[in-house]
Structures are given as structure tokens and as C-alpha cells.
Length: 360
Image (cartoon, rainbow, N blue to C red; front, side, top):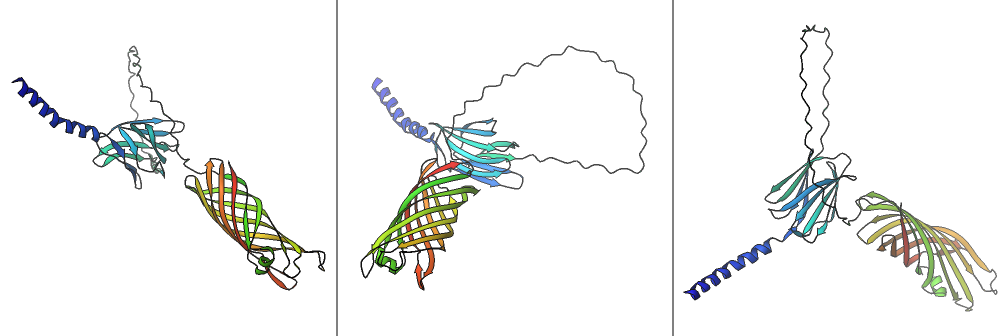
């Protein structure tokens, strides 16, 4: 009899165990997405998460924020930063606050909007609405005022009653807010200084016969970045390079040297993608050139300058917030004329460099 009872309890335990395990597995919650529903006078934010969900909400000031802690949400797959700029909400930031808590932070404008939180079948909804001032219409002036009879009221005798002070309400302390590291909501103006070097491939066939197809160079740059929308911006850039090479004349095989000094300025379009800041730009260049000949030539050197265009593309790769590597390609078109000969000083430039950024 006792063995039969033990067998019965064991069978019941084995039947219940999978359900308990499944229930424990179901408690793992994930914030899948954050969806915005904008209208003319209200902003709805859907936190796409399985319901029911335990959460805590509270506000913080200086700066003003609404905090929602999703208890039991161990991870999230939505964007960590969403720009809103509507109905009093600047941005929405998401991060892990604790191993089993996902925190959603609503950065608010100076005029704090009214909000409400609702649980629905497809997630947790937060509604924001900025209270608009109501202007009362002033009554029009009446041509003839209507006389009003004044009633003489007898003075009322008031009895004084002892005032009772209301009991002090104990406000529970706000939970400690841990720092959440997220990208800045808005990019700031930035000054960049850099140095670099690479190879310059000149296009002129006559120069290639004497100096070869490529020559090394080094130089420096400076640019000023101005944000225009979100993570996009434009930059005004200027750079100076020194390109030098030596070779032998094709007939007498005597040594000659060539020195090019292009000064370039350009307007760049840039966009931030985490550690990468790709750019593309168009601008102009002033080429100063000097070719030095051997003593047997009638003239010792030829020098001058010409104007051309440049097109460039590349990217900065951030190592830390203020320091980056730079990889780029640049095309020059610069033509001139010497001794009735057409000379093409343009070419392709491949370079790498180091850049230091100053946030302004």
C-alpha cells in the first residue's frame, strides 16, 4: 500500500514538473520594439513586450525625464536611441539597468507634457500630450450698461475654529538612477586637426616616363563640422600636401626633380555611424609646381601654379571619442601650359592619416 502511494506521488510530480519548467521559461521577457504613433494633438509610444508585465514608472528633474523600468525584461532588440521631438518628448533611450531590468528613459522638453500609461494586449502604451493654453474671448463692450441693484448684506458673524494642521505625507524616496551610457541625442560642432601621408599617381604620361607612376607625399588638414540634422552634418575642410619625386631624363638620363604643393579646400557631407564617420566632398585646389633641371639644360627650373578641382571620399574610424584613423581617396583635375606644352598635374591620391577631434 505504501509503495503504491509513493508511485502515485512520483507520477504526479513528473506530470507537474514540465509545466513548472515551462512557466519559469515563460517569465523571460524581451522588449522587441518601440513604435511611435503621432497625431496632431497626441503622441503614443508602444513598448512591444508580452503582457502582463511588471513595471515601475517615475519622473526625474534637471533635466526632466520619465523613467519606466520593465521588471523581468532581460534584454531588448529595439534601437537604443530614438529621436522624437514631438509633444514634449525629445528622445527615447533604452538600456539594461540590471540583469533582469530593462530601463526606458523619455527625455522631456522644458514644458513637461501630461502622460498616461496603459496596458493593452500588444504591449505597454505611453501617451503624451502638451496642454495648450486656452484663451478666453473677451466680451464685447455693451453700448448701454445695465444698472445692477446692490443688495445690502448683513455682516456675518464667523466663529473661529482651531486650525488643524494636515498630517505630513511621507513621500517614498525615488529609486537611485544608474547612469545609462547612450550616444548623444544631438551631434555637436567639431574641429578636426590631422596629419597623414600616402601615394599620388600623376596622370601625365610624360611625367610618368621620367618620374614613374607614383610619388609619396605627406601633409596636414583642418576641418570644421556643423551638424544639420540628427547624425548628419557638413564640414568645411582645408589641407596642404607636399609631393616630391626625382627621375632621369629620357634621352641624356640626367637627374631631374619635381615638387608639387597642392592646397585644397572642399565642402564635405558627413554622417555618424557609431565609430565610423564616412564623408564625401567636392572642392577646388591650387597646385604650385617646380621642376628642377640639370646644369646642362638652358634653364635651371620651371615653376608656376594652376587651379583645379578635387573630389574625395573616405571615412574616419574612431578609436576613442577624440581620436580617429582616416582612410580616403581623392581625385584631382589640374591642367596648365608651359612652353606651348599642355601639362596635366591631376591624378589619384590614396592616403591614411591620424585625426584629433575637438568638440565645441
